[in-house]
Amino acid sequence: MIMQEETLLRYSRQIMLPEMDIAGQQKLADATVLIVGMGGLGCPAAMYLASAGVGHLVIADDDSVELTNLQRQIAHNQANLGDLKVGSAEETLTGLNPEVKVTVIPNRLQGAELEQAVKNTTVVVDACDNFTTRFAINACCLKFRKPLISGAAIRMEGQVAVFDSSNPDSPCYQCLYNEGNDEEASCSQNGVMAPLVGIIGSMQAMETIKVLTDIGQTLVGRLLLLDATTMQWREMRLPRDPQCPACKSL
Image 1 (cartoon, rainbow, N blue to C red):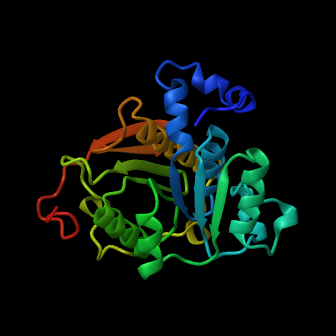
Image 2 (cartoon, helix red, strand yellow):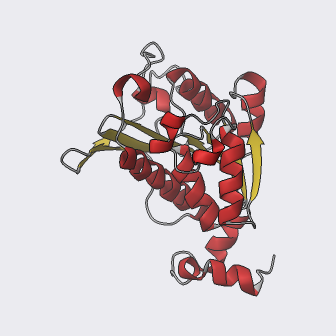
């Protein structure tokens, strides 16, 4: 596909990067990214991916916009109160970049519908807020060999990692967390600082772009942990667990 002059101008600041160039921008345009969750993490991740030129965003969430969301979920605004989050986010994303195709899934992805969504995507961004869905997403990404960009944030702490089952050295999400450890630590119960989810969601977008364009070194095999009270990052190596029940047979 030959990019039009207006498209080249829109992405000119990225295209001028030697690591990206037009070839990398084309890879973004050809990609489909599934983002599960249009909350504090999913909003900035989706907005940066849309503005960066990912061709097709599939966004899934079954919640509606509430007043308490507006402190951190930046794709929604006061006028969207009571609206479905995916509808509100779609309006924001297409306003940022009308060239991006946005598909909305206004329900919680699970079962066969989750499998189909993962199968038809290039990269999956996990921006949900519960372990049950995270484990299900991980299982589908393993089944269809899709890269998974994982992020989490609560209180003043955040983390981000990349799991890629096409890489034989990559652990999976369940190498990090056991499926039995599924106690939910929610923002509604514990609180979260607004910019924290923006930091982690933006990093998820950055890692997604790196995976799609083969730029730099991704976070495969590494977990970054942020303590926002001191603004210090820690890095942990994540070896693959040979006894992991999710990925040991791969």
